[in-house]
Length: 350
Image 1 (cartoon, rainbow, N blue to C red):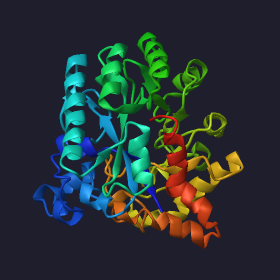
Image 2 (cartoon, helix red, strand yellow):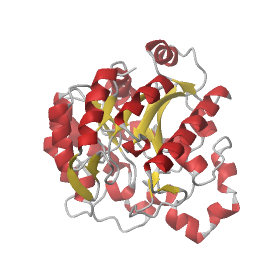
Image 3 (tube, rainbow, N blue to C red):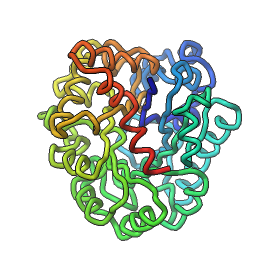
């Protein structure tokens, strides 16, 4: 069974946090800084490396181009950008990191149909990589997307917090003039839209102006998180239905804060039952199992301490399938969630 994870900040972890993702998870956890209380509080204990992903074949991951704004309200650390030029340079450094991992055989870039089919046919023994830009500030101007498309980028989310392109999490607002120009070029090139992190206003504006493929790589259900902080980080039922109507997919993130509104900060307070609840809610809205999948965001500013009790590392993701089995789910529907839904959608964007 193919396993697809639609959101991993691999290059950010390697470059900004200095993690050697070419080693095993156990090796990475032995790094002295990984064991300090300060590090654990800010980044968490490592769960994901390239050899770890390679333990499951076939698999595909969406590796993000994620760069940190200097003014960001976050516990994330590392190099941050304050100008468009700095953002541009940091984004390309991450792209070059991914290219190096492909050149050395850890990943297989998926930027066309034959590359995707090679993974599906098990003709590739290494995980597939689909490039996803999270926050568009790495583009100094919208027309730089042309060069990024040529380099393999196939999916883009204009926002994280606010960017020069759109309102985002914790920063309400519409698409900017640049954002509207960017959406127009995305549609022309065939670059898909990631709705994750878009502010409410920019989300609905984007759906009105963008007619290309749209999904949410890592966005959980607002209606199951009533009372939680940062409500604008989650998708309302209306937003979920709008994505479903466009034949999109929603990836479930595994951060405990995004799974349980009353999370007490401990690992064991959240279990796979909370993950299943998110999955089943989207299925209820859709009337089928074709619009929900995984977008774990593992090591995206949180580590093993802040993910469900049963999950210790990336290779544990198939346990979500076992949890669905225990709920009585048929095998084909479980396969949809673990990978087939993303595969179907990827056919539209590469």
